[in-house]
Image (tube, rainbow, N blue to C red; front, side, top):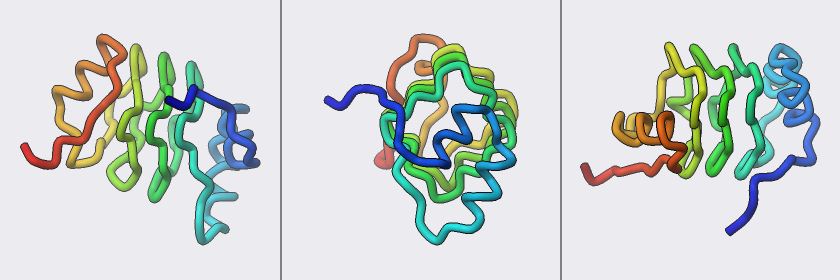
Length: 116
């Protein structure tokens, strides 16, 4: 199992510096995006982040402020949102509410359950 990691990408560095506007501007200029899988997003203020098309699988969002983010077109499989601020988030349709609650309250990794 791969550990949580820092990603070698200017986009990731913008997020680590909580410069969401710079991240969104740079992302809008790209046709393909780096993988943010296993990314360390702990405690960051990511409000306003454009996540469309991003692979955030197995990301670690403990204590992050992700309020209002539309994750519906992102991959969050295996991500953990323990203690994150999630008010107003839109999660992928394949991610059931019980998975979100378990991750928020207990730090479990969210699983997609497309068969339910």
